[in-house]
Image 1 (cartoon, one colour):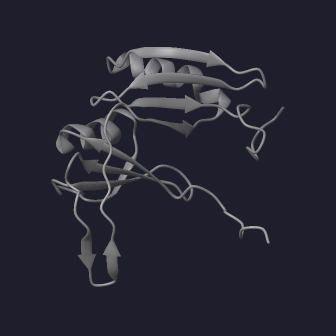
Image 2 (tube, helix red, strand yellow):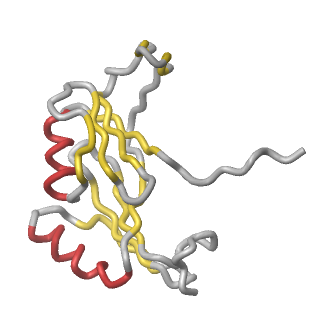
Amino acid sequence: MAAPRISGVLETALYVDDMERAVRFYRDVVGLKLMSGEGDPRFAAFDAGPSSVLLIFRRGGTLADIVLPGGRIPAHDGSGPLHFALRIADADYEPWRRHLADRGVAITAEMMWPQGGRSLYFADPDGHVVELATPGIWANDPSNNS
């Protein structure tokens, strides 16, 4: 019997050393809307597009289970430079290059994918690899025009 269907990735989590710095970066530079965790020294949640959430946790701040009225969240943590990609429109590729340059954020790499998509890579203040990707990278992308 096959596994039930997965409809998408709901959350992506990063672990950071300085919550205030990370919140400023993802809110003010990347332009994500803070949905939860304003002023919380342990956690922040950002709207990362339709049905997608970027979670930021203080490194080492979630090493124990958290019990809430609705149940229990298992302990988790991460270290080292992690990677995630945010989807952008092809028309926004060059505007993103300028936006990052205007804010002093260095583009660390670029990629032209065989299927036609493009990616910009840059590092957040904790060294995580952030990718901005246009359609055309993965065959299962419904906005893929290739």
